[in-house]
Length: 257
Length: 88
Image (cartoon, rainbow over all chains, first blue to last red; front, top):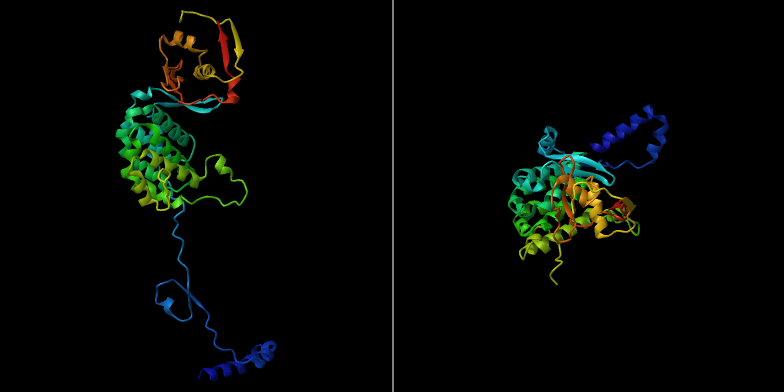
């Protein structure tokens, strides 16, 4: 039946397309070429002989997530923070309107950490510098606030924005050395913090023998993550390594061996 | 030491970094000539210092806001020449 049909069509062709008749006549009858059918995997279509299964879509592990308005921005715009911006020759600096020692850390420190998600001036600057000052001068007031800092840290890392991750990692490095026992206090929260570090751990530029300037500026995420994990291990007590290893399997100890 | 109105007699610029220069730098960032003037203006007898390094830790500025300084050196080599040394 099929053959008959094809001959029929062949016979019809010369009338319509005189130029191509010769070619068609000389060539052997075309074998029915199944044009490939692109389909998703694991569907009924995918089991057909002529189907080509499309690869899986990218999961978007490195894709940046949209930002949400932060409480830090709201508070800053409302003028709730006792801070002012000072421009000096060296750059910007925060002038505190009250003494840091007298600040309520339970209220302010989580708010400043919330500002880590910010990427624009002046919010980003105030959050970064404010955290720096508060950690530097917090002493034993930092430790009790640790549980409240975890969610802001997790949110900031989860944005997967390179700049935000960089700043957050530096803040984490400062946090573990800011006071005694802070490193240990962070161990139970590795499950919240480390998954993103695991994703980005190998994010290094393979530039051959070229110069990667982000290394000089301490903006290379892979290196920063390695430094941060090492700081966690150093200050996290004896349980730190095994807990890090559980969340970041490729991490190797910097203390053992 | 902190007499009511001590006026400096001469001024020179710092050439090389030292711990003294570092502290002067911190006072001048906050808007004072040096420790003597700070104590005069603020009527305090002690300045907050880092116990580890002895650098100035906290200063209250003329508008009553506070400046906080790091434990480590803040005055880079390129800033040293901006520091003024007052002599009395």
